[in-house]
Image (tube, rainbow over all chains, first blue to last red):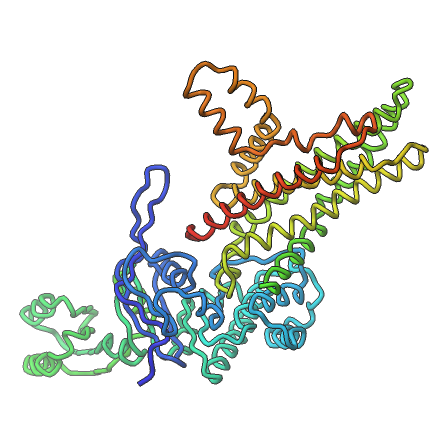
Length: 308
Length: 256
């Protein structure tokens, strides 16, 4: 059995902000495991604790409590950083340096000596920035800076790539390019851990997803596991429903319905779905015609916005 | 280790010399040197003394200003613009960031100060005035002094905002210049606590009086080599302490 590349157990981070040292529990007991070679997506609303979790993973901040194992090392060990690539959420780079100089700088930090120029040129090409090789970063758009950011994260050929909102600020072509690079990294056996607000991309790319809210990990699982637990059943009945039947629908919190003329539309949530056959029997028993029964799968957006 | 440090040194140097503000300072320097010529013309029989005095004082002042500007701005900009996140997640020790940055600033200050000094020497040569070893010793001591200021500015910027770091750096320079006076007032004070406090401050602060050779420069007097050596060592000791403190603070801090 392979060892998890990231293993967090009850990870907490508390800040004391402002002059009055107000306590802020940014992360409250996050536990998760990321296996080697998988693409793991971390989603959650603003202020949920995504970036704080990522900063603990990259050694920028120290956890207040809990345990963290990264690539087999306890806590953030400097030996991890040789095998780690990181793109922060919003970052700017040295404006007076050219695209080549900036990547050369990061390549030196990774200790790349042999064929450094070739490596830098390869990554400039890979993120479609070869045309701007000798241009200073001060002249770059946000999207171009983001591409350089992605290149600096990957230039050391890391085993684990942590990307915080990698697609933010990119146009659709840029987003597609980033998605291609992420898939290519996975094909090369790298593990990708990324946070994003662009849910269709998360759905398309991730093997597993974790939803974090208020500093706590709400759910973790494969997309199939998460979304199947959120499936709804839609029923459309024709005819005049008896008041007792309507009362029964009103009594179930996991059921929603609407009436229009002689048509009754009912949506059963995951919990109420078990009572589908009883509900249909009761409807047929009072002369209602079943026009339509359909299972509707939830999407990531529904999961994301739930209780949000 | 050396590759990492060389990365920081070359990046710091490139960024500093491409900074437009420094070009402005360069033009200002030339203007001041020309102004010193005018002042020299106005002072009868004292032309050479006035020109040497104004020129070297200006180089010293610019050394301090550039040291504070570069020392505070560099790390603050990196933290503010979150560039530091991408650096610290690489196989780099936090103390290497501080040492690398300091060495980069040292290279930059060296080029800037000696560029100004070269312009000054050209002006002296054009005016047919003497160029002696005292001038070279004085500019070297100015360079060491500005390195101490840069190390202090770098240390302040590891834990405070740019504005506060600049203010603290200016305060540090003023107190370091007043070091001999602090010692004098400590000796005069009758209060035990105040005397101890002043002695403590005097011990903690560098003595910039060691780097002040303006009298020797003005009158072209010889500066003993031992004075230059011990003053340089005094500066180096403070630089090491300040860089160590900055590294410890950097090691402890969270980058929220």
